[in-house]
Image 1 (tube, rainbow, N blue to C red):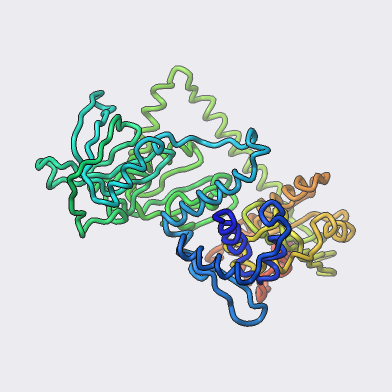
Image 2: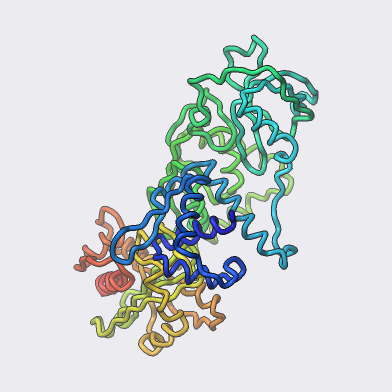
Length: 493
């Protein structure tokens, strides 16, 4: 039954809101789980109660209109660590169990530290039992046995960790220690119990932490990172920390801010990202990262050729300067274009807007919904453009829509706001449908606006368009394409 509950949760999460009839249609299309039999309404009601009992998720009906179902406390599964982890674990397990025929094509990472002692530790935590552990200390290269009070466990980077307090009186006034389960060589639960401190909280212990480090000597503080445009997309999709905010974005880089303790694990994460990330603030962290990089450079100094690096930077600088010089000074005939996507896949275009400009005048426009590929919506994207799966279930696929567009844009270059994203979406969907990409000329209204409209307070699309005489009133692909057309007519005069 668990697999069926997981399917229901996943389907409703992807749709946002869904009617019982549509849910049943999707159910029947998944023949492996449905076996061609509909879900009776009474059975569905029982499943809702079971889902509430297991995951604490409440499926409600909007009670009007299409009488669609939705998960009332959806944020619980995204923010509650244990519930989210359990749901994801069940979802993955469900997918794997139904994919035995291709098991040799599904590769997983091992979490060996959870195999031996995790269950015993959790049982001891539930009963507040003292544990005797034999622990191998990597730093001292020695083993010791001692008693601990197990407070909590945490998974980080494929390793389980135990937070526990030593029972020796010497440790009474010290904070709990963190132990890797990999280093536990033996573990026995004792009959002796302990009283869990009422003022201790795992969330507070790890408050502001990245990873497993919890050093109280390092306070939570504002950290700003400058991230290359390519890497920013990954960090945007998978935030490094729950406090992450994007405070600036352009075609070359983004700046992200965090409020956390920038300890060892966080510094290791920065190093893992290599040259794509630069620490801007705080100053001490920037200096510490510079020292680490210098020490690494010294280790590789025999093969390190500074002259070649300087030449590479000079070539990159000349390339950017040449690119700016090659911006067209006049553009009278063009097609402004914009897309909306259903999810974070670039190919998942769900709507397109085209505005045709000839001799500096808007002469035609085109808008269409598109059935996206892959065909699912996430709430983040739906909240931006307001579209959901029901809007595009009966829409044409991209090749059919593009066939209507091709004759309108023949011989015209494209312009778009943040053309790097728009062009990437276009190339991705061409690849998805194995269509030959014609290498369209593409010009960026964001780049040229920064070059020509130097007095603006910021370079958001709404701000630039307003400065060029166009007010964005409707938030869809056609409205954004019209805004780009107005901007291009102004800046390419």
